[in-house]
Image (tube, rainbow, N blue to C red; front, side, top):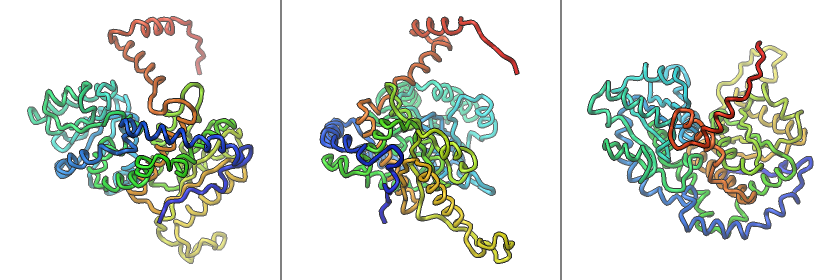
Length: 446
């Protein structure tokens, strides 16, 4: 059964269906650009040419990684968010009582306390470390690699290499040099595959395989959406991804500068953080873009939904539900009279009712809302959703006339951090930092 995008309430308040017609008329140039960039190999997340090699390398690797009790992933941003979303969606046992493994740990921040807790409690002999960085030089990941390498060496001696896998560029970067120097197992992040588009490569699929998730099904789902776009670019005008992009661009032009990702599939809530990076880092360019706001149903009905319903009219909503939800146990017939209408109903009926109620409330409040209804909650379905959103993000960027595949502003903070730590070659950054730090401090205590 196919997944469904419901457009019934997508145009509301000051946004009319005509708002997107200008952008829909650009399907011809978008199709030609799509064909050119696919042919040039610049859109690997769509063409998926890396899949045969990945499958060949993963096949013998999966039995090996399953011999470990723990996997520790060193990675940040796009190197971590996809893996975490997959774990929460399809291997949630780690978050519940009585879990006995496998265990996935993700070190995705600079937090000495958390990092020491991981290394202080994990057993090196039972732990496989996966170090992920496309460039091979992401400072947060590389410094963790230095510390974990020493941790493994101290405990395991010369056999430490067996407990380390790197996922990085095939030819260049520090991590590739380390793999070559020490004979580490290494998997490729293909050329032109930026971090936020990389979850459906070895970046996300190696942790998924460790957890027993059907990683091939994730790829199959993605391919079901990608194949028509990559093989027949002229069909882009009929694709849901392009329609979503036209809607998103029309929203921005109408002053809607926040995009809510409201997920009413509780197990998939972490996909909100994955989407937030995809959308923000791809489209926040040149004073343009809309701020992604991840929200979880029903949790955020009781926290931030008041702002969605009665705050500034600058918000649109991608609203995610599934027709396939576990219903759970039924309420008994002895429920008190004031709750009699719950008798014999399954617990899951509350989620369905709350999702409908919230969706209606948002629409009644004039929030343009696109309802994405998944027919199932399988890895294949997740792969299809992820690819649809990646393609929609790409097309939205093209309609905005910006590059949705780079992140130039992010690099400034990295350069300044390197300068602060004493790296050479950052004369301008050092001068800027000296000026910044020399400004008089204005303080108030509390």
